[in-house]
Image 1 (tube, rainbow, N blue to C red):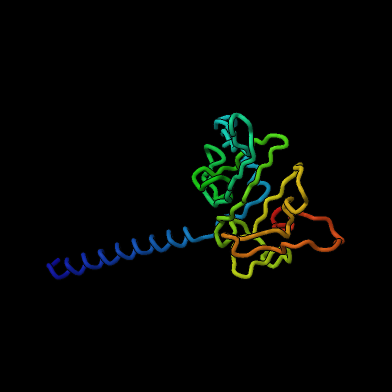
Image 2 (image 1 turned 90 degrees about the horizontal axis):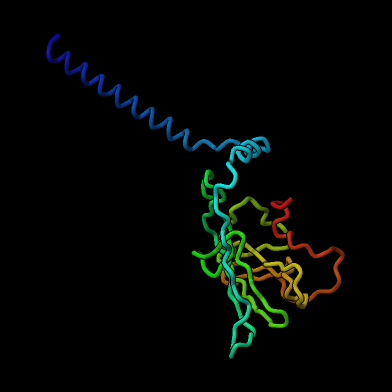
Length: 208
């Protein structure tokens, strides 16, 4: 075999090797773009049953005080609690998940949110702030009549159970607002309606 034939053979082998590498990369890229398998009840049960119990310490949720002290006596206080999108790890053997969490900052936001320690007959004022992104982390129907922001964003409202307060502070499904209060739901009183107030109306298709 002369030198020319050797060079041709080497060049052919090199082109073949490059083609194999490119084909492998293309197959790997397509595989990485393939949609994940569907989530079914069986797959959820399989994952849940495979998780080892009692391997994570119970989190100590932050405590916020709904009062201040002046000369040793409790006085009313105001709190500002925000809603943030962040990563949260629910179990040692599970990957992190994107969640909407409550807290006084993105760094301290938790799931569930902080507890508020209050004193009977000492008013606590809470300003809820929406720092959520423009899109929801779950599929939802933005055409639900209860909350249709004209300029995007995730509408939200905080609903309180068991509180002793006027109804306008109860967190009606129509009292929603988007980030930075850019858009707000109908803030005024209306006449009697034929359906019961339901705070889950905002994401009924997710919770059902």
